[in-house]
Image (cartoon, rainbow, N blue to C red; front, side, top):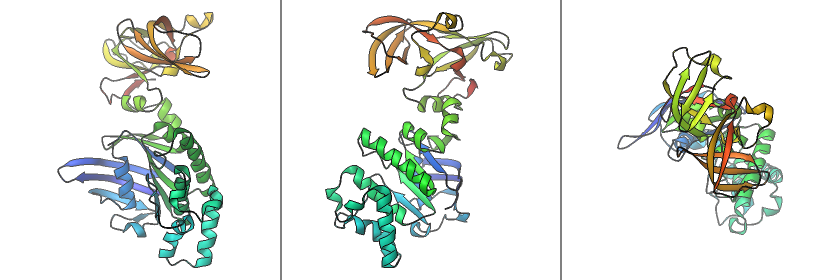
Length: 369
């Protein structure tokens, strides 16, 4: 096992396209680190540079303290699991898992032991004599993971390994990967565009966009304390609702006003800048911070807004309401399920203690919350 250090790394392709722009990431020993972001943000390019499949333009990559910039992929002591499984169709599952060990001239008894041990771990012992075409997508993915495990590498690299699986199988395999990491404690870098995957798997989550790191930290820290508007809007499902407006008042009495919503900031006003009056800002409210019903004692502390419900998505004990404010602003509320037939006018309540305030712009930094 080993730590991985990415120091000031950039990747520029011919034609001047910068895919990765001077990023710094420290992956501690035994840590499961997830790189997450929209398509084209540079996460897969970063992983490929760690693997040695992509040459870096600038910076340094270290694995277990050793600089690997000019080290061939086979000599980096890493094992990579690809999105498309990359299994040899003419070989049995046993031979697929053993292939890398045979190339390293590992003795046959040890190969047998390692393959069967990994197969037991992944519940694929009964598949070792089959060929890949006789397996389901989930089984093939387990074989690809098993092939990586038998290598006993210093670091695992996963490039969107679950994206080809159906929703239920993706959840099951995700849990298996989590249990596997807890057992093996091998340093892992995992790439995904699915923020739910990132939040459930990662010890450390790195949110990327446009080739840069927007935030790096523990999953709950990123969810509750996003550094900027991009992170707040990307992490969480349904996405955070944003309202453009202005911040009025000061540290003794402050209020956000804009886009059909007015919210007193009594719970946050101790952190309001003294000269904030009239400052342009963006209010962020997560869908589950909106309420459809509140008790009598809560009403005085809640801000309220009138909305028209256009779509209801039932999700069992909860439901998502797609709404439009009287000023025409769209938003989503995740509330306790009850009978509502759109179109319908309702009142939504906002807990001022759970709102966030950002500077204007797509990457506006967090001001309050």
